[in-house]
Picture (spheres, one colour):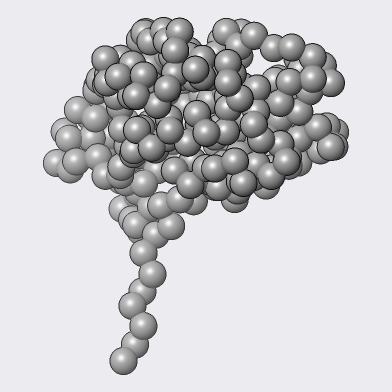
Length: 257
């Protein structure tokens, strides 16, 4: 009996291409970082560090401090290692799923003083468990500052995908502010602030199909043959019309009780 053909690795990211097109995520990350109070010598968990563009900004601001650069995609961590090599012993790289996060995951670097995250939590499908895990690795009084996709995120793009006769494939959780506040409270967080804001993002038309393939529709196109993939991305881009991704961001800050 022949072995089944393995399916696409939905956890894989084309990290070099993502790094090239991720200016929007870096811009959001800078805004989130501005909301995180830092003290010299702090240890911060970057939960979903990607290729390390925001992590680098964090390390530059964190005098004498350390950063745990955590991501579940080995390809992302490989890019981050190259970018952050100059920080030497101030950064620890962790290949882990946030739903498996525990103090032991961070070794002697737990508990951390703060958690920073941008454009990651909507890929995590159990926010109750996620926030429980983050609380477990944060010291009492430690800060959580994050941003991810909100309920209603990329609705216009999803409509463009449906216009091609398909549904957007993949798994994500775009949460509401109300559900996020409730979950944070249940995990023992206090001083909670939650809000959303629109972040319409214009993509260079020359890069639009690459951006859709690498970011928004990554899991949808993984199993497609190259020709089918090109036709699908071109159809979505045409249905979208104006090359603007209608991002809606969910922002929250909280303190571990």
